[in-house]
Image (cartoon, rainbow, N blue to C red; front, side, top):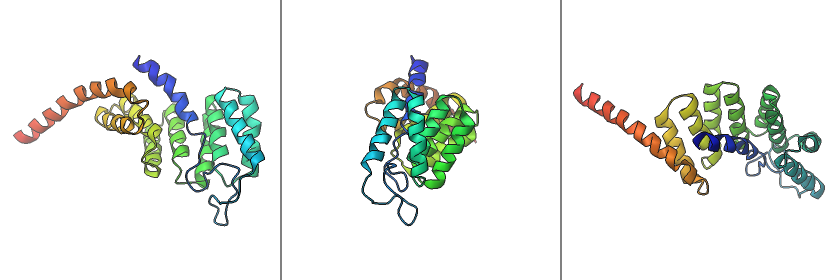
Length: 213
């Protein structure tokens, strides 16, 4: 059950990086860039908004052939916004084109270095490439940009538990995720309990060793 839940959730976590709307230059792609190169406050373009919504709908349905040209068009017309680039990266990562996905995410980060979603998506790509130390840093950059970004906390917890063998750090990130993601919290309760049982004896042994030194 544990592994099934992780494998079912990981693709959705990458999809969660699709809509980047809260930070400068990560606003929806129909908003034009202001004079500083950050997200402006120009009125929305209804046609572009509809195109973006159609691209997201196609991605959610797994219709990459329909989504890709829509996203590439938006990325060309709105180069100062990270959203279309992150979406294209998700599409390419889903096809296993990890190097191409990474390149797009780095473009997105050049547009919006303080956006959590592209950092989180980059961490997923790096984890799939076996670059665990870099994935850790990317997830941490996502959380530094937005401490409330639950998916990055979850991904970091999985990385610590399953790939870096750091149960004490995994426990902290799962607890962070539980505090942020109310709807998904029950699914990690058992993991947290298991990790607490593994971590507490180690902490107790460490305290005894310090006391005897």
